[in-house]
Image 1 (spheres, rainbow, N blue to C red):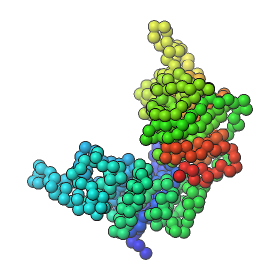
Image 2: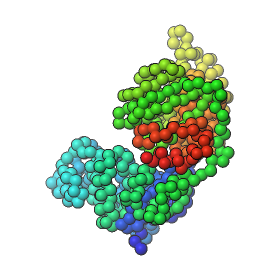
Image 3: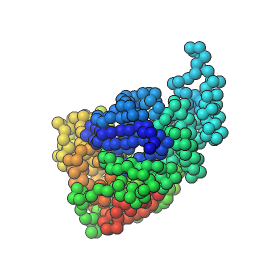
Image 4: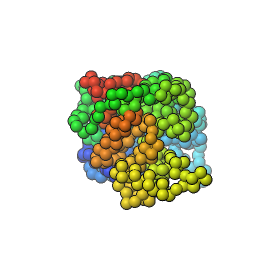
Length: 498
C-alpha cells in the first residue's frame, strides 16, 4: 500500500452561524491524485484552506507522514511541504517568473543585494522539468494562464512541496492547455507527489484520478477508487438529498404574462448567447457551479456589467440598460450575493438603507428629506418583513445576516419592482431566517412580480422555482420545467458539469 502523506480525521470548522465542516475525513497517499468533489458550499475549499494553514479547525486532527501536526499558518504549511494553487492565481504580475517563485525566500549576496543570477538559475532547473520553455526572466504578465499555473506549481516545488493542492485549475484554460496540465500532473504523480484536485468538471476525472472523496453540506460522504465507480454514482453522492417539505412552494399566477426576455445575452470573456424569459407571478431559478456565469448574467441585466451582444426585452420593448440606475427605472432590481459590499451601506442606519432607492419620493422640491416620511416608510417595512432591530436608527452592520438580507429586500420592495433577482439570498443565514425569506419570496410571486433565484443549493432551486436555467462555462445549457418529475438533481448536475 502506498505511504500516506496527509490525513485528516474528524475535522470540524464553524463560522458565525454556519457549520462549514462536520467531522469530515480525508486521506492522501504518496504518488496519487485524489479528487475532492461536492457542490458549492460542500466544504471542499474550507478543508483545503485548513490544510494550507489559512483556517484552523475547531476540532479534529491532521497527520503528516503519520505524525500529528498543527498547521497554524500558510508559512507553516509551506514549511511542512504543503502547497496550494488557488483558482485565482496568486502571482505578482509585474515581477519576473524567478522573482515570483522565490518571493519572500530570495537568494541574497551579502545582506542587502538579491542574487538574481542564482535565482534565475535555480528557477530554470525547476522549470526545465516541465519542458514548456518558460524563461525565468520573463514577467508574469507576459505569460498565458496555463504557464502562470506552471509557475505556481514550480513555486510549490521550490519549497520542497510533497502535497500539492489544485483548486479548480482548469477553469480558465483552453482544451490544449488542459491537456498540458494533465501531463504535468502525471509527471508530478510519477515523482511521488501527492495531489489533491478539486474540480466541478467530472469528465476530467478519468484522465487523472486515482481516488475520489465526496463532501456534501459539510459532511463526509465517501471515498472510492475511481476505477470502481462512474460519473452517475458520483453525482448521486454529491446531490443525494431529499427535498421533503423544507421549501414552501406556491403555484405560479395563472394569468401571468411575459415580463422579461433575454435574447443571446453576451459579455465577451464572461457569458455567451444566454437566452431565457421570465413571467410575472413566476419564479425562475438559475443554477450553475463555480465560474458558470450566473452572477455575470444577473449583473448584466441589472446594468452593472455592460453587454457586448444580445438583447434585453422588458414587457415587449427592447431596452438598453447601461447602468444600475437605468435598470431600476425599468423596474429591474438585484439583491447581490455579497450583501455587505454591494447591497448595503453597512455604516448607515436601517432607515437610511431602506429609503436609499426612493429618496426622491420623500424629498421636497428643494431636495430636503422629510424625516417624518422616511421614518414612516422605514417602520412600515420593518414591520412587514419582521426585521429584528432595536430601532430603525440601528446601524446595519450590527444586524444578523438574515436581518441584513431583509433590509436589502426591503429597500427594493419600496420601489415596487417588476423583476427582482436574488443572488444566493440564503447564503450565511440560519434556518429560521431562510424560512422567513422563502415566505417573502412566495409573497412576491403571488403579487405578480417576476422572481429570479440564483442559488448553489439544488434542493432550494427545486423546492421554490417553476422553471430552471442551468448554466456552465458562461453558457445556458438547458431550460427545464422544475415541477416535472424528470427534472432530477442528477440530470441538472449533468448539464452543470458539461
